[in-house]
Length: 413
Image (cartoon, rainbow, N blue to C red; front, side, top):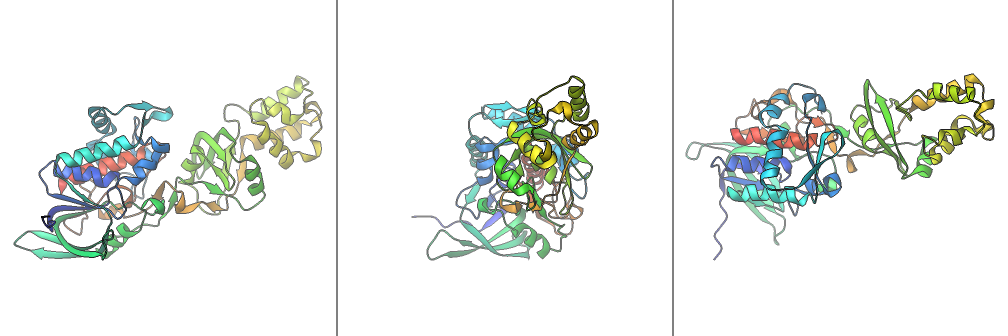
């Protein structure tokens, strides 16, 4: 005979992603009775999809400068309390093979499934209960002297027919529900709704780490170049990144574009240096002094893919397509060189939350303790991970924020 599920817990965590699972394991290891509620049909969906299925789980070089927030200092306490070295140590204890790629990014050698299995094992070791297919229909703050409870939740088990509703109570409620990015993997606004219910401010939200789209002359250019990539330096609003840019049938993507998208605002331009390693103007003028007779597009293809130089020719010197480089005026070469090193483009928008890796903005950190992630105005209510107004650069930083914020909350609940 099946025993009925308990209804009273020390800690209930909303969301079985990176932050939720790690917080559960941390809290339960301290003897807390922990329940994790997940709306999706399985846990860790975003972990499984990340890094091309290899999960870029952290970075060797984590500093507060790798994060974007209205309060740039907020993340420092958690990141120093539980650092990348602490998580690397956990990965090594579970004998997960990993590799370092450029810029200090650490990936699983085999599969992201190993990170999910590690988190499951950590939870199981401390008897964490995890339920999937659960929808939260109501949350209320309560006072119960008998059990020292603070919150009552009403949940619906979506997998059962007919759907079953249950009331649960807990002393500490942790919101690890993620954000708006990639709704197909469970992204939703529930964390913000909970914050607003308990009178916490939520900052402006927009998609981050997201590809750009074009609606002007660049759209057909990008369509023709779809699948072509090159290393560029990309600038916007005082920030710059040197990484790969990838042309897509909608616009541009790749690590350089995803990084700079965090700093772009609608209506502003981005500047792309197609040859970040050297001065294109001086290179072209020197080629003329050397009496180079080849066509300009062919000369440029030494360092830029020929398919790209053909498109640049159509944009910048269509009337001289057959003219040898030697016959270009110095003024023309200077103009082309300057555009190669500083190509100004105005995206029409981004691909939005559908493909965004993070949500910029979120629960305002001014209302949250940086040491514990507890709401300052609501005892026993915690927010961790992406739901907060803390977003990392590409390269494992968002996972490290999940681990660090989860750990300090798990130590406090």
